[in-house]
Amino acid sequence: MTNKKGMSAVGAGAIGAVVGAAVGAAAVVLSDEKNREAISKEFNKVKKEGQQMYSDVKGKVEDIASEAQGKAEETVAQGEKKVEAVKEAIKK
Image 1 (tube, rainbow, N blue to C red):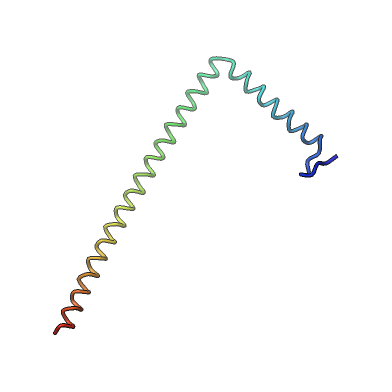
Image 2: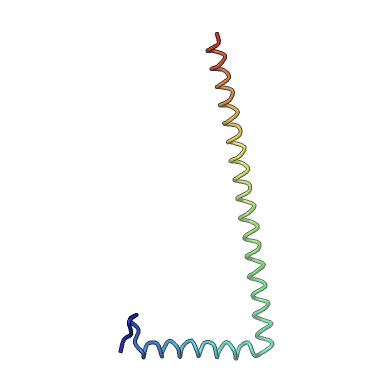
């Protein structure tokens, strides 16, 4: 029998069994202190790597933004000089 969302009772039961088995396996693994410590160490390692990646990317983005700002300011200054030159030419 299929419900309104297209899932059969057997399919839902099978998914529930798989999720239940995974939760049970995780509970067994985490019940051992050595496993908890290993998982904690690995988590901290991955966390540090993620923080380093974030820092690296942030630095690169800041460098690019700074360079773009410098180029924009230079372009504006050149444009202002050209406007002043045109104003002076019109006055003559």
